[in-house]
Length: 282
Image 1: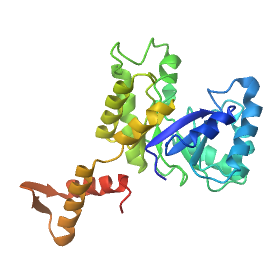
Image 2: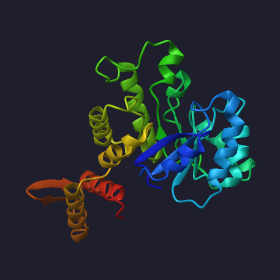
Image 3: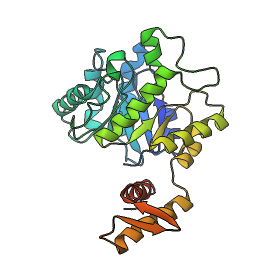
Image 4: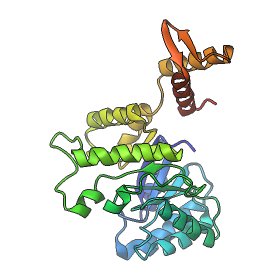
C-alpha cells in the first residue's frame, strides 16, 4: 500500500469522490467526521458505502468519527461490508484505541481493512504515541494533526506567524514520527492548511520527507502533485541507493566499504534499502 499522498474528500459529496479518483493521490480519505454535518451523517454513510461498492481503482480509506463519539459503531457498520482498504481513526489514544477498532471491525464482519490512526489530537493521546507497536496487525501507519490539540488545551495557535510550529507542537510532531517508526509503520505528515500557498507546501513537504515521514495528507487537489514529488526519491538518490546495495551484495562479509570516496556501513545500507522501497523497488 503506497501512501505518499492521501486526499480528504467529504463523504456527503459523491461528485467530489468521483472527481478525486483522477487527481493522482495514492489514496482517498472519504470523510465521515469533520467534513460532514451531524444532520448529514447517514447520507454520507450511504454515499460512501455505494462508492466503495464500485470496482476499485484507488486505495480508499474512510475516516470515521471518534470511538467515544457515539457514532463510530454506526460508521463501521455502514461501510464494513463494502470492504474499504482502510479506516482512519481520529482522536486515537494509543494502542488500546487500535485494538478497540480492530475488535469493532471484526464484529462487523470485516477482517481486511487496515487502520491509520491520527494519534495526537487529545492531551492524553500524546502520552500514548509510543504504544502503537503490536496493537494490531491492521495498523498501516501513524499520522497527526495540529488543529484539534491546541483547541483541546486552549492554545491560541499551533503555529508561529511564519507558519512554523510552536515548540509544543514541534515536540508532538517528533513523537509521532518516532512512534510510527517504533511501531514499524509509515509516518504520515499532517496537512498544510494554506492550500493556495504552493511554495510553502513544497518546502513543508520536502522537510517532512527529509525528517523521515514517508507521505502526507492533503486537503485540496492542487496539493497532490507537489506532495507526490516531495515523497518520491529522486533519480540520483535511487541510483546511489542501488550502488550502496550492490556494494554490500558484492561484499557480504564486509562491515564497512568505500563508495565514491566515502565510507559506508550498515546504517547507509538500511537507508538505501528504505529509499528503494519508497521508489517501489524490492
